[in-house]
Length: 366
Image (tube, rainbow, N blue to C red; front, side, top):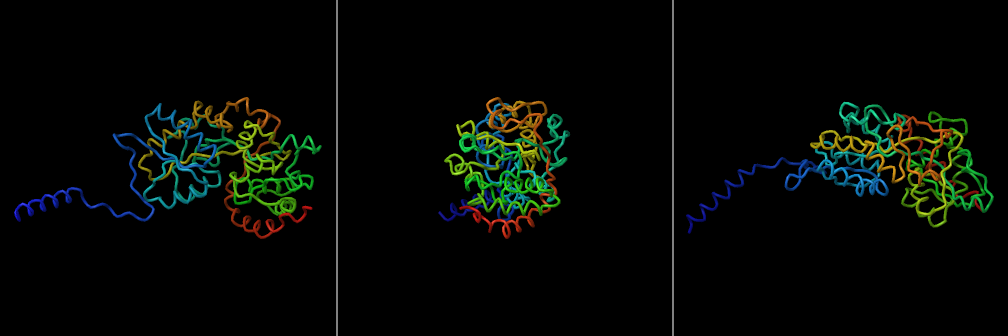
């Protein structure tokens, strides 16, 4: 019996030795491979929730798998949160493709967290409208948009309110506090401040006039909202008649039956995109690049535009169902913000907003 037990012990020790010792991993890291069970190829995409998540999960991912055999796993989160995750996992990435707002594309490039993208590794970049590219050789613009004012058309008609022709028109006692403006920590809020700066003689280089005007914006508002999850219901439920949002959210509200329309101020609206970045050191770079190339193809952009995003491929148009609410005319002014400057000044300006603008909330409301 003792001989039998010894023999079994030796067999177990040999088996364990054959497995080898796993390499210790740092907190927050895990080993990832490009194949799942039965050799299935998989990649992980991280991006915003809501309409972007549904576009990828329900439309793009199934079509991509059908054409390539690659399964897409999706992780939702805000752009800044995703950037933090990518940085935390930089020695053992768990995310293959990250969707960032322009400022975070620049931060990711500066931190060397993403691999340069151009026509050499993503051939479809040759067809992309350069106005959507946040910075050269960084990421592929996948979900095109503008950030613009919008208003409830029925309320404006009923009350005889004049249309929004300038960013300054967002500041008015006539709205009676029924506004849904974002806090500056959100991209919608930062672009609102930039619009107010431009319309009052300032610029991205000189935000002072914008900060002064933002104090009046706050005084005629009940609150600043943190994100779209809070802002969308305010519009849907009639708690707000005036807002500044991404065009895709305005379009989504309009097709759902809300009487809302985008306004293009005379100073213009900022044209930009959520862009797909290839995470550095991912073991699935080949599959990830295949996804990025697909997501900026004409086929994928046609599918994405059905969700209310402007196609980032030159020559393509937004679907007719969105024309009335968020369609851009040839005469409408758009501009490409200085995203590098945004990234440089954001912390300082956000601090001033919190100290000087937010305390003014509601002071001029009756």
